[in-house]
Image 1 (tube, rainbow, N blue to C red):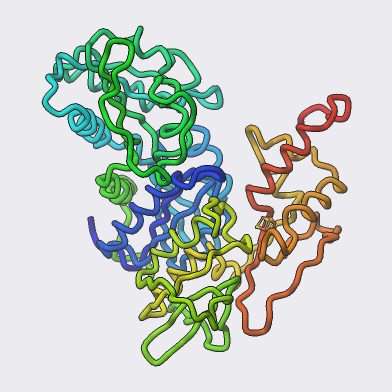
Image 2: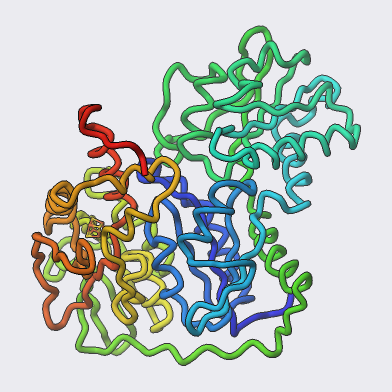
Length: 475
Ligand code: SF4
């Protein structure tokens, strides 16, 4: 793989508003690739978490951008949602000054077979393969037939290799063959179950163990458990082994880089002709606050800390790496997950000492995703336009009335819930009723450039909870 200091890599994941572990593997792989210094810039974006797909291009200044979906299959998200949200029109799209190349998702890379087999062998060391049934588990959904294709392809391929397993089969959470029927689907005394998921999130860590019978009800998230589950589980006269999601495999970082290399080769891109990005402007010194964070410049470097810890006599926990911001910002003081990073609930008790402007920008991108990009290049979309482009289960939000929209914004976007300053109107001619406190002159504003997915989801709840007679036909 050639080094591409003039290009940016954007990893796109699903994310979750409920499970703190969903975005973790995407960030971990991004950090692994960052250490390899292959790309000039790296950013992550999510469908269900910040930064959103609409914000992420503004987070990088490179003129050449490679987008790799951290998704397990071709399907609804990779074919519909990601292109729509990024405004892509094909494999390569010119968006203002950026040339955006859309690579294949990680899950269809040929190395996934090797990773699956490695996971299976690591699960039950010493147990002969002919004593093992291997089940590869996916979600299964009616939204797009392609979503199960990657798993069926993997199973067919592993079967064709005749590697000695008693049997190899696929199973799903929501369509037959159902993973809940694992015991009747298999015959061997040892059953290896590998979730073909990107993260140890809601489905693979909390839902599937219940379907398998390992747990009676969903447990806490993986990162909130003292120990990861122990194998094997003695169930229904068999030994059941359950692995973590395939997407947590560290080698997936190589697969992501491979997808970029494959794109460059298959599209004959001239790496030497890729233009250099413009110089990154430093954050001017008069700016000493962003959201709940103080930016303190000293002779030795830059320190970040909670504004309420500015004169604290308590001992603050010291961090020195920008990626530590991900963990600091993940939970509030009570340990609750913070899906909205601009909620005024950042915990106190820490200080982050950084040595460069680049580290400062990276840390701020983790504390307040896309805030710097939305400050410098805000690209605003009216609420009505955001709702009208929704598809799938969120299409119904197009039916929200103006009054309901105003109320929704007043409830979810007020200063006590979110520190972002709203730049968008209801529609081209109607302003919002809600007025929010402006950032002080020395504070970098946290701009909100369009309705976030948390409020889009709340809009769906409003429309769905109307009495049936009040719901007009779907658009
Ligand atoms: S839509 Fe509302 S809650 Fe969401 S980021 Fe913007 S201001 Fe905050």
